[in-house]
Length: 287
Image (cartoon, rainbow, N blue to C red; front, side, top):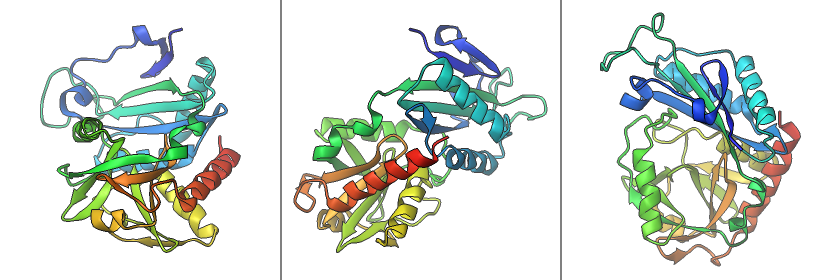
């Protein structure tokens, strides 16, 4: 069955959805995006994603296409129209289509933003079988641009990183800059040492993860110790456990880094407990 998608005010069958070849998202990667998970037909941490979207738009001086309440209505309509139970809603805003290619930004008063949303059905999203055994990662050099805190559609290098991991027989890659881990290709990275959760502090170097913020808040509420600082691959390999967080994987244990087992080589109790807490609390607050 065809999905119903949203394009600039219209709900359409996906086969009928079109944007201009002059759209700056296509020509310049001049756009931002968000991905909100859906569990049991409800939106997980929608407010956090909406707030980060506004920040990304502001950092790029890009016009806001509609209000947060209108966005919420669109998300809910897509859940209903697609009978979405578990999965994700992808949202993308670009600077629009000025009718030709030009490096200079078009006048937002003359060229409206492009707003596109679509659903991805992922039955059993919260019951990922990978959790039981954990995932493996490799390390790669981080050669992305300097504003990784803005959630732009410039995802070529993270995609290349995913393929490097696949070629190496691993599940994902952690990016490293000046000897320190920045983040995963599509997730934030953590290690646990002596019951202390360690993750890189927020800056322009990493994405300000919405799941990251929630997980760290829940960890502190559970009286877990959190330290926000950089760590190396060597330190990660010597850690008791490691994990990642993202909107689609929630909390996922990492059991191998560059071929070396982390801890016992099995998912650690801290990661598994945080996943349990995150899913329980997020479902309670879901919209």
